[in-house]
Length: 420
Ligand code: ASP
Ligand code: MG
Image 1 (cartoon, rainbow, N blue to C red):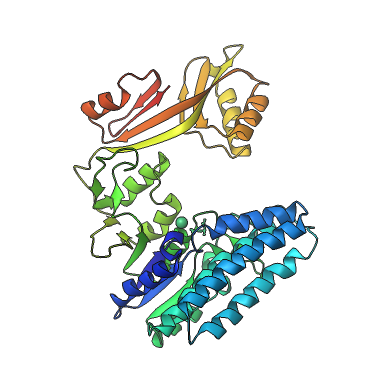
Image 2 (cartoon, rainbow, N blue to C red):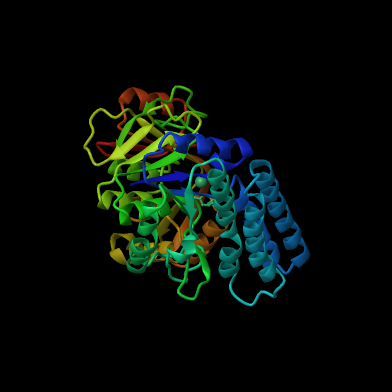
């Protein structure tokens, strides 16, 4: 058993959906659980629908939703002949689910409505792809993952009930593979025990796939992307970035922690727990080897560069030297927790503390306001945080040359510099 995940970019046009079929043909003798995201930018479009609805702009919400509908109906029309009617009927049922809600008045929290609307993106995309694959002879069984993934009701960031989800997978998914090689379903979404739809956080499909891989004891998971492999830096910023063909779980978690747009740490855990290798492969050219991420310890990794722009440095100093005690530091970290702030770097000194954060205006203002009760505060904006894993002297000098450095931190593996 293998698990494949196709992201939004891999199904964002008629040609791309056909390409998914071409890839699956290469694996026709394998049992594969396939997780597919919403098409292209559908999730963003549905967020706008939810926002308009929640702001009481019903007509605007319906109109925005109409565009999402039309796009999917068009894609289905171009792809399908024999299954066209059946697919349209399935799509219409999902449309009705949303429209029914949009005609209501909002009486619950925003996050609840967000999930009821946004979850439709993956249901629409998977319906279309499933009908298309069946039509071209790639037999598959479509599943509504909301019947499988049970979550709590922490809307927009729901947590999976592993026990219930496991029993659903064993009882409802595993038997399907007796009749078909491919079970096709959605990532990113689930449902509560009261059948309300939930989402697992943006970009959550990789994680959904990893949960399936874990509970199905898959021999591997593959994430199909539009890049040839994981790269040592963003090739848009660093044209001589190199491909990395082998990584381990810890390295990927480290890279993600420092801000690399690789794979979310949440995705790695379920795989690491069962020692399931994760492949990153290119849907534009499946013959490329891509990257394997597994449990081996690796030597000689190249320098890996992560740049975070738009950073703000906050210096907090105590008026009464109290930073030498633990209390103010504890207070500060409680504030981070309360405001859901994740500092990208912190540094302590005798009477001050520095933290570097993504410059999110709302959060910085709230933090500054709350902290000003205990500290003198100084904020510097427009900074760049450079991180190099497995750094060499040369590369560090090259990337910091001519820049004013505000802060530097170094371990054996990693160097970070805050640059103006
Ligand atoms: N469609 C969702 C998003 O765009 C989930 C995902 O693609 O991983 O965030
Ligand atoms: Mg994605």
